[in-house]
Image (cartoon, rainbow, N blue to C red; front, side):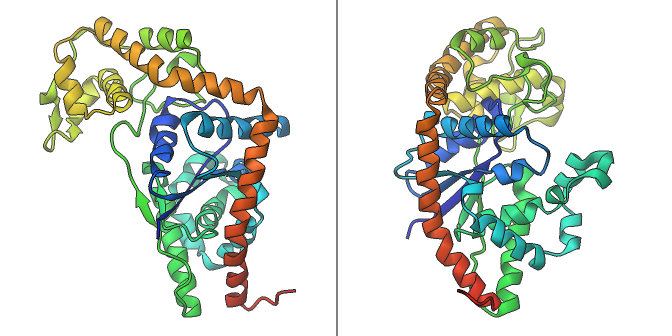
Length: 344
């Protein structure tokens, strides 16, 4: 039996290179040997207030990015979360299975709520329980995760174990993480110490997936650098797998651009460092421009075309929701039976 993979992306708008290299590109690869469900998690989005028309547009943008990057809507299931009610229903069950102490340890809530914790929505607080429901609604066996989601996946495993133990049954799987390699953490083009983010006020800090080839080229040429020649493989430690922290701290922008090149060219960082050792940034940036336009230009063009045809995108989401429901409904029904809920 194929492994079943679930992952979701929030419809927050302005998808960028970090979203592509950290998540969406890996989604495309996984569909070759896995049963994949890719969800636009609009229920998660409303843990903070959303302008309704903008939320709808952003939901279509994420779906368009999935399609433009190469996710096949026939082989994989692409849908938006709110069209499958099992997510919300199972999340309530998990609100009752999960423990307050577990949620109090979730660092993302502390980061997002900040000093205004008392004014944060309860949805933001129980967000990890909904994430667990997203995964276990389909009995997914594997989830691709970044560093910032590892803690939530551990909670999903804890919830599954507790549910199974509470009812003396082996029902929910203990999901496994899928962690990928080079440049899963892409930094700002203007400040190599900060993550690439849509919230950065400077559009030059990121490459948006909808950027034109000219915009991509301009942003890379204006990316922050330093006056030294590019480093070589000697900058790596642990058998060439990690950048020396002291060197990365001294030259964050250099290593960020080199890591982006490695990821887009699907080479190891040690190979790229060997290729460009001693080169000047001007010549390296020209190579990075050519590579970025080659890889990202077609995705941006296809996204623009799809976003101009919302009827088609909505049709893909509707079909995906129907197929997702076909998987989710019997699992939810069985969970109800285990819980002792009477069915109609």
